[in-house]
Image (cartoon, each protein chain N blue to C red):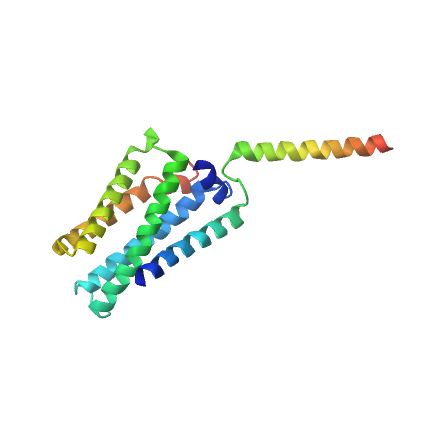
Length: 57
Length: 139
């Protein structure tokens, strides 16, 4: 029973740590390549949307 | 395995590992205090309560150590720049396994204080060889 409680406590510590760290940092803050990819994708989407708006005029 | 860890930590494995390693070290200091109380070096609470808490906390630390070790191995592997970190971590896992075997078998109990102290030192070396650099933004 004590062992089970300790394992549950350890899992809770891991879950809380992951939740707190990722909520503070946001997704993929360490992986700069992935971050750059996300930024590029967002810029492309923005440009596409602007192009479409201009075409409609 | 690497993808699983990266997805689980939403791309922040080093940060999660750093916090968990710091939790382990803090709990290891707590373990030293409880052991000192258990061996009547610090008369703060009863020895029985201190040893029960030491055992319960130790089981939780063991799970955390194994989780962080697997995480570290999956994402970083055996990088040559961190030889001391890797050696201390492997040493800590070996001492932890011996300590668990001694506790479970009930034989060699006289070695437990030495094994515990050695385990604490190895955990401290493992922490100090990576975490300060990471927190300073060098990693």
